Figure 1 (tube, rainbow, N blue to C red):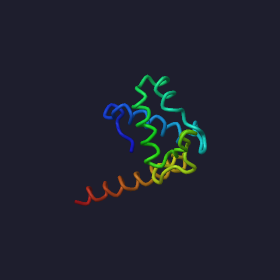
Figure 2: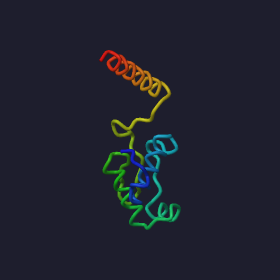
Figure 3: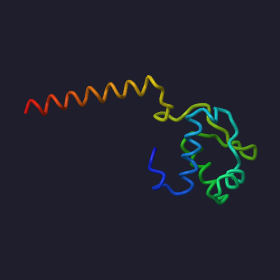
Length: 110
């Protein structure tokens, strides 16, 4: 769901920031997320905006809501949104290099 932040509305930007922190391990599975009021105060957004961001994370599976207790980071990251490792990036680069080489051979052959 990575989009240009300039194209996102404030609640999406806040949710994206929290997703990034989860991927980076700054927020671990089971960690309690800040409340909507805390997020609103620290991020300079309206409480309703912060609530929408937290609801979006719950809807996407990044977090779970435990009612009045709070919102917590899910035990698993939604599929397709695993954090990138150096090995995964290296594999993607190798795959892209092969694709480019194949395309060059096709272009040169025509």
